[in-house]
Image 1 (cartoon, rainbow, N blue to C red):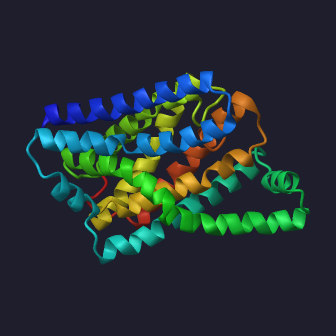
Image 2: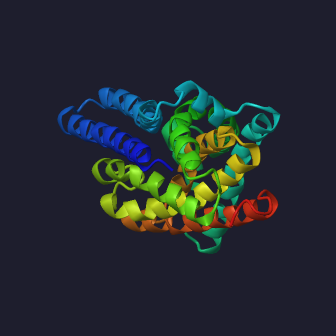
Length: 290
């Protein structure tokens, strides 16, 4: 592994992401318009998620490697990769189902809560709201494969593409922990300054999110290793961004307690650990995960 190149990749990825977070934080403190802030948030999300791609491109350029050729090798579009691109989002539905079962067992979620929110905001009956929620659940699959995948690609090129290759393309425990930890820490300023995923915990949410990213990385690297492509991790990442907010909407717990124990907290981590174990048993090949 060329440490200088990896250091450049990390410095650019973290540096640009942090600058974007500081800029958005400054704008949010000085611009009261919700419309402007929503547009800024969209641009912020797209740019931020592509900072690992920018970091990888600069690091490859520094080392004299072909940016196009390297990125093409990460995608490695072939039958198996495309097949798993369409299947991978279903893993998030399974994770969501496990989360709901655990949440009901521990009495920390209310599955009717999102229905009531939709009914109130849309001024419709509970029955219509239920149908609408079901439609949203199904359509989230298409969102995961399209617009969300476009966003997620920016991160996956960096973490499961460039960094994974520099670590030897081996889904070992060590590499899973390294990539998961780096991925989680890359969100630190977004969490601490902007309250991303943890509006109450803020900086205290950073280690929790790192713990969430590690089992997620286990699942993703099993798919990348199985297919030789980042495509399945792209669609899985897209599905997570489309669906995981339901864990927050169904949460019975308020404020920091809900963030600590809910979908982005301990119960979410446990759900993803269970999915990672299942994925290792059924999808991991002997010798892949050590």
